[in-house]
Image (cartoon, rainbow, N blue to C red; front, side, top):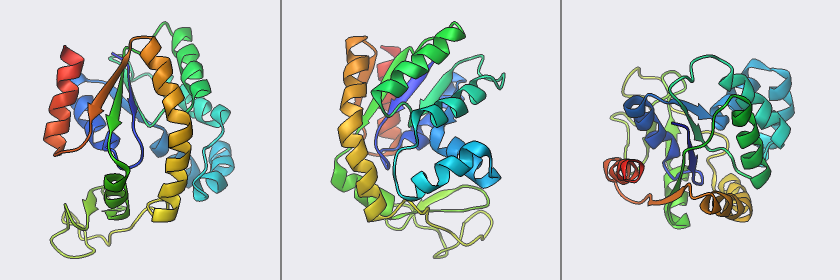
Length: 214
């Protein structure tokens, strides 16, 4: 089963994707993670993407598709893939379909997490994470036991450079412009399922499971 997750920053895509990865034995493919790793390693694609990411702008389609195709060829996507945060534009959706078709695959379902913007702002700007183990905290809803320190290993928590109100607004501007076209594309194909993303992670996950199994 190959799934696409749509939703702006803070909608919970990453959290829900990890649960689906475990339960449905699909491999989570997060373009954000792929891009950040490429930047960290200083690859050719990473060097091209870094200034765009720093400004909160979309990375060109050819760079993102290149990373996606590399990941799909890794050999561990036999049970299916879950695309987290991709595609973000209609050309990306079409390019993804072409890349999958070359491998004899297709998108089965598209999950769109719907969350009001005021909730997104609270979720994103209050989000901090551990650079060592990756655990994510929130200053209000999931604070660490010791302020500013990871519960697991005591590492000082950091905030991602794009988790600021200014960067979030830029990302939302792009989302408002491009994602409706992507949703309409998948709606016409009969693959789009819109899910209420407000509530506890368990509540949202139950809605996603029900949609997939209906």
